[in-house]
Amino acid sequence: MSSLWLSQNEIFEDIDFKSNINEDISTDVCIIGAGIFGLTCGYYLTKLGYKVTILEKDEISSKATGHTTGKITSQHGLFYDYLTNSYGHKFARDYLYANEEAIQNIKNIIDEENINCDFKYQNAFVYTTNKEELPIIKKEYKAITDLGYNCELVTKTGLPFNIVSAICFKNQADFHPVKYLAGLCKCIIKRNGEIYINTTAVDVKMDNSDYITYANGHQIKSKFVIIATHYPFINFPGFYFTKMYQSTSYLIAIDPKRTLANGMYISATSPTLSFRTASYGNKEVLLIGGMDHKTGHPSSYKDTYGKLEEVAKKYYPDSDILFRWDTRDCISLDKLPYIGSFSTAMPNMFVGTGFKKWGMTLSNVASNIIVDKICGNYNKYSYLFKATRLKPIKNHDEFKNMLVQSTNSLLLDKLKRPQTSFDEIASNSGSIIEVNGQKVGIYKDENDKIYAVKPICTHLGCLLSWNDIDKTWDCPCHGSRFNFDGKNLYDPAFKDLDTYDL
Image (cartoon, rainbow, N blue to C red; front, side, top):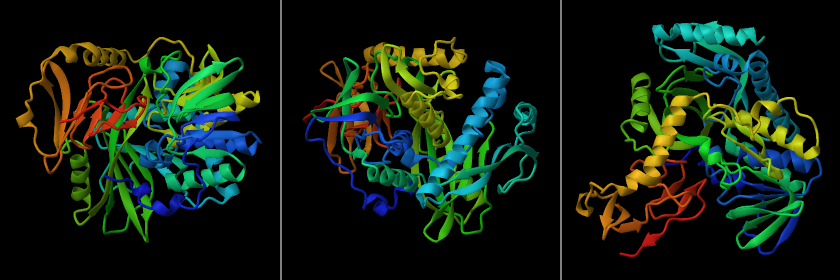
């Protein structure tokens, strides 16, 4: 299953990436992770004259940024009433305008660097088709207008179905995120920044007032380190694994065989449905997304892609499905990103994570905060996202669920005897069985070739679950993912699974 954004392999073909570190090096700033957050930091820092080294364990855009919806917006679902009630008027207003500034910042980069990434201003809508949800829409609308923002309450949109009400934000945007990343990479390298791909950072340690990052058997010495790995792979200090979980959502791109209305849309409540148009070759296609669930919780094709395909066929009966892909998002328990100092015990080491499905915009907010910290400048929005914050967890239900799931996966589930036998595993499927008192993860491919792994996450030891949609082993605790053959795919784990020869 491939993302629309990654369907054009030539996007990066003329960029001079480095494929491996073959010696110890020194730099001003070491950035671990080359998604949109890491590369935006690299862009701003090289523009200011810093020597920057960026490490990416895979190919550029192969993970979260290459699997996003590509929406650039300050409309983050029904969020501003929550922010106002939880943190106050000023806090909510600053969050809104931090994201509004980020939209303009991204447009400024695109214009200044002449990046061709299909950027388009769009109206963004959060909508409902349920009359019972009208009060929460009106409540959110009032919260937003009380912040001084000029949004509209409407009953008509470009959607192919009737709605009860929607909140419209004007002058939002969408783009091709991978083309944008390619533009950032070119700017960084042009300014003598270095981007290493297929280079896995495995640890960071303090060295007096500097840091040593260990990657591919070599050391990168730097004054500053930015952890931009989607989910922080360093557990202590910081303890981000106790404060975040990952959510998986799904997308399809369809050729609707008819003219589409512009705009970006997301439903007000679950199950989430998201819509936007995008360019593909010489035509406009429609992206339909949603059906999110906690990563590591088993789900079926029917309940994920199947639901999106039902929507596509209902409203566009002649449509063709061109692409299917899914993505993971880090979500903090208080719904706010962690941006700033990684830990009070590690000065000059910074982090940006927990963007809650809105990373295209929040990554720019985060980059400006981190760059200001490195430069010693004041940033008026940094207090919103303080990464070292110690506040009561406002979402008690999610905190409880996270603790229960982690306890089960770390302890109780390991004691349960698997209910599946080897012979019951179908072709092109997997499951955990027991062999000589040990749990073994088995996958049988279409030709009944067998792959056997130790189904224990290499992050913190949680019992993995089989994902029959993507043919992966997923961690229900913190969202790490592994291919059917044990190769690590997603952080916070970075080591492969142990395998067994059969």
